[in-house]
Length: 114
Image (tube, rainbow, N blue to C red; front, side):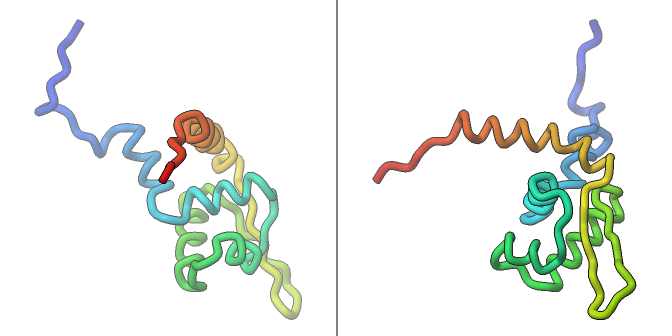
């Protein structure tokens, strides 16, 4: 068995690092969770769900998730414009990881007692 040496390792090349790069930040996991829970969601619905997020920040996070192939943006040619977001197959494949995080959180939550 070969010994691993940290001086030979590069964290940025790990699968963990790649996965975290896709979901890091304050809102991305919550957006993905919302889309998993409610399937198809419009921009304003997402904004209400996330509560205190600005239009600019939500738009930026949605663009990043779309660029990473995790969500799909459907634009309907009508007035006023209608835009809906949903998970792609790639995004759905990530939900098992997020589900496990939820289960871990429920099992390990420490209720604060004052």
